[in-house]
Amino acid sequence: MQGKSIGGPGPSNCNANYFKNLPGCRPQQVQRSGEWFAKNPGVMAAAWDADGVAVYHIPNAEIPADLSSDTPKPWGRFVLAYVPLDRHSCADIAKPQKIVLNIALCGDWAGGAWLKSSAARRTGYTIGCNADISNPAGDCCSKFVTSNTHDVNGYMKHRAYFSIDYIKIFTPADILSAPPLESAAFKRGGVPLQG
Image (cartoon, rainbow, N blue to C red; front, side, top):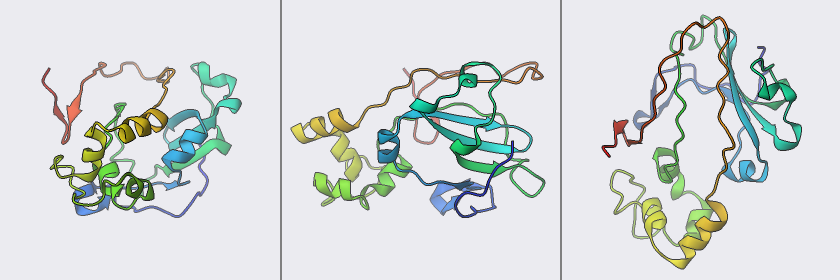
């Protein structure tokens, strides 16, 4: 896989701690918003090999035939982000991954960005509350999402949806075993929810 320079270089320190403003080794990337993705449905794909990790967005109208085979080929023009893996990068930190579908509506990212959003200001849930997801009763985003008003229901009905047709993992033939599959629900901090 060969990456191309997109956007500005990201931080080179791969240690991530969002509470200390250490974002990890952010790749060079094309910045897209949720609104952009909503207006441009397609396939999100990632390829990870010895050269690096690439993230792709392929529009629905341009999905290549090799996507449904077990031999995907890189799709250079669809690259959103690329992290080269060499001795000067995060190669020693990149380990086997798990796929997590996080549908938290007010997590670290959404909750922290809430008060800066013009869309949030239009909801009226920016006064008399804080950006504090550790205290949902006082958090502006959490108050909006959990309120039972006509405005929230209408807002969610027209904006809060996603459609996942399928998830497929391509595993190279030379990998003999894969870790066992797991599924679970977790709350903030990675603590499993007890059902």
